[in-house]
Length: 337
Image 1 (cartoon, rainbow, N blue to C red):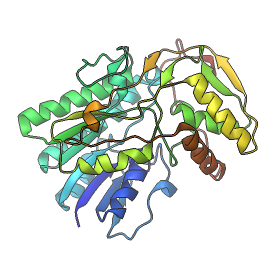
Image 2: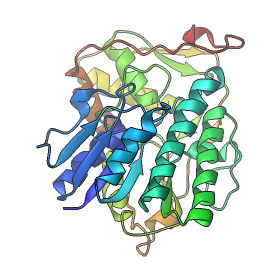
Image 3: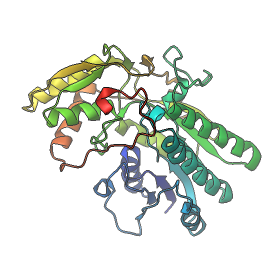
């Protein structure tokens, strides 16, 4: 039985991929500090199949615990999903953004170097910034916010570690992924989840600016087999992963509204001030679709995906809504105050 380490095991990618690996006969070691996910999102499996470590990987003391995990287990690969992906909020939480995302990743990189473990890193479409979409992997990164800067810095460090220490790696740049086990109580990230939570709470969906920003929303289920493929293939590659079809935020809100009505809920929309973000952002996936690489296929049906997530969200217990401590207040939007 091969062992795989999954960071962010209680998050969207981590919870789904841990379940996928278990179904394929792998042993999984999950790592998460439960700051953005919940313990009931973790898979239920015997301890010899799924082992959970509640570790904050950005903590200065994390290295010892991480070393024990990698030293005492023959780890085939480490999937590093853990991150705080609030791109729009990142200019107001710079210290937290870089500490949580960059330093935490460095601790994982060090362990993968030391124990000769392949690292699969989930970066972000945010590294492309304001390039003209669809973004492809040959475009030079040009991030426009601290979150994108953090992700690009990690990518660069991984590549340097590969050149200097022989680190085996693959970098994935996903975008606008949606699915159950997503944290819908975080008001700063995951627009589909935010819309659904607000509708269930009887609050209007807040649309930034004119709502004509475009994004391509993808179903998390279609990432699982390609991720598994990366355990043994595509060393040194960078791939975009996600849906091809882009929607405006207005169209997403319309979709949530239709689904809400079908499930017996009213859904209102409200336009608020725009924010600092790329107007149009979606990717080209030609490289990932190549059967010599991942053979990636996205079958996302947005309305069905939103309906599935809405029905799941209706059954969830009420949780405290996440609120960040802002490091600077200057220029912060009224809807986040």
